[in-house]
Amino acid sequence: MPFIPPMPRQRPTAGPRPRGPYAVCRGFTLLELLVVILIIGIVISFASLSVGQHASRALQDEAERIHSLLRLAAEESVLQGRELAMQFGPGGYLFVTLDGADWVPVEEDRLFREREFPPGLSLDLSLEGVEVDLLDSENPPRIFVLSSAEMTPFELTLGNDEGEAYTLRGDLTGRLALARTGEADDDVW
Image (tube, rainbow, N blue to C red):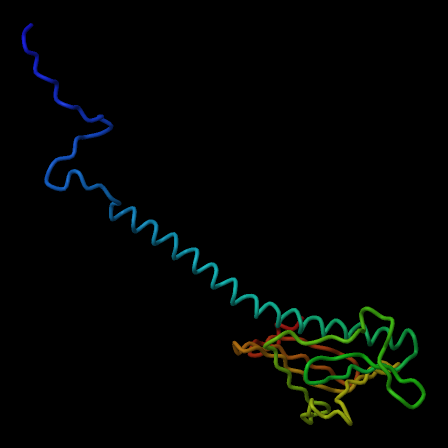
């Protein structure tokens, strides 16, 4: 029987055959690496934007909540013929009503319940042009909402750690104006 030399081992041919000294080392191309880095960068930027918007959104929500509650309190006070006040403390606020000669917390009303400020929120309050101390427990600061449709003139500024702020102003006639601090007055809601 004649000798038949073995056939050389063939590689599967899925593409052009690599040549050169680095032909057996396969890895990622520079383009593939750049695309992956770009995708990671986009994901990280979206994540950081959503975290920053959370604090800003909490501030805006709280400012709008206080604005809406004061408007509702003004309407309820006139319609029910009772005197109300929004009372502030260092960590939050609640509504109180005049009962004889004393101001007592409003009970059994979900809307006028006691509320706490979100973490990282600061409050500055001026009543009738005078800045008040929120830590005064003997004479806590109150915005009075009277059944005669009058309201204590006030300026309330809510801010966060990022330097954003909203200002809510109320006048004697009960007119309220909420605006982002630093924006023009035509941005009033």
